[in-house]
Image 1 (cartoon, rainbow, N blue to C red):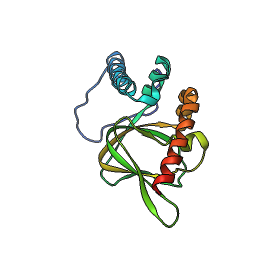
Image 2 (cartoon, rainbow, N blue to C red):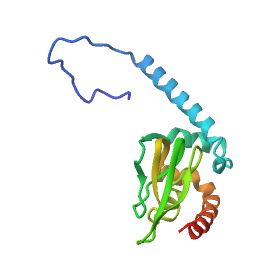
Image 3 (cartoon, rainbow, N blue to C red):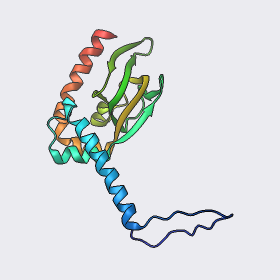
Image 4 (cartoon, rainbow, N blue to C red):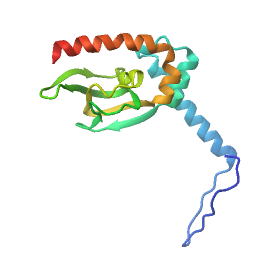
Length: 173
């Protein structure tokens, strides 16, 4: 942006070309970004684990989220894999399963506002469970670098929740 063109484009046949001036393009991009930010900010305020974030942290998180869609039966993350993303369920549901090498069992279900993937990011351990979409699923994903920058203040809350997973795991597998 605000740099010389990096390439030249030439039509190989007759065509109609539409142009958009820089000011209009920027206005559209900014409006769309603000719309996304407001939508995600409102959604994130409904997620209990994020209640301790400041407005600035919440907006930083909202700006860095990427929406991902999964169909029924799609695996979002697999137990044992390296984890580089944190996920919040925006729409739909997912099931979490764990395997001890011989047995595999369901350890929980996730729905709108639930999150997963934080253990791998906080501890650098491999994924602790396999998460699979149940029906159509839409998640908001954030990468490790942004997670670390924004969630530094939530570190103790998220680590405290790890104990709940261990208790839940012990009673269900």
